Length: 399
Image (cartoon, rainbow, N blue to C red; front, side, top):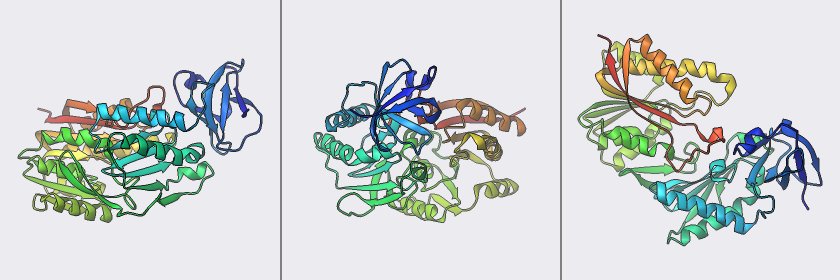
């Protein structure tokens, strides 16, 4: 018999609404022996069973739930069921050549991310309990993929995020199994990329914008395009391949720009895209001073806030970058803009864009709104799973 955690009366509201986390201040008592990372039974203040999760006293997120069934054993059969459900969902909702196979809490495997780049898996483990189950989950995931004739030639771990330190874990990266070439060629929306799973940001490539990149393509035929925060060139290359007359792509990362140039070469688009290594906030005013105007401006910045405490500063950043971007759009042209911060809510992001438009006397006509691709599912009641907001607007001058 494992340890039993009892909640305080009136606590666990997020859990009971469908969430996956129990915080340290929601717990009344713990009975029985356990080690950090162990599976524990969770009960309400009156003893009513709420399910099972893994516990870590070093984390403010004290328990991450694995099952709402208190009688369920968290064993290999259970984990096989979870990864099978995740794979079947993706087969129905996305192109699975490259996709996120496991998205943590939204796939009921909290703290775990697994991305598939062609025949390579990249895993990120961010919680102690799931880290103990990682080897079994990956084995069962490979078995599930093999049932559909998909052979995985290698697995690379990118558990090098700082958040692991908050769980009392060391940061780790490296091969899980036999070594392989960590530069993996993929194809997304018909565009080729070389993904560096060892040294690229996070797991090596941002799969969450897959269908947003596709949405921008229809605006770009014959257009003059500006792609800001291009990273490894994904929006820029989609624009160029869709028939843009010319694309100017800018990013502050020299490594990112070099990878973007390499990706342009893979697609024979070197002559269509100009890559510039500059700070976007400094570069856009220079373009404005030169009188430059574009048919399409794309803004895909990194998260300006990763906590509630820095939201006010983030608002300033988003307002500034959108204001600058709108100034560079021709009358009747288009602005694609996004935020990848969970703490920048859709309502707050929309309000910030509206303020930017008012400041530069532009009128916005919304073309579309989207979130992250379906392989990054949004689990209702687990707010942390909803982070990407993506708008396309037509920008019209006031007259």
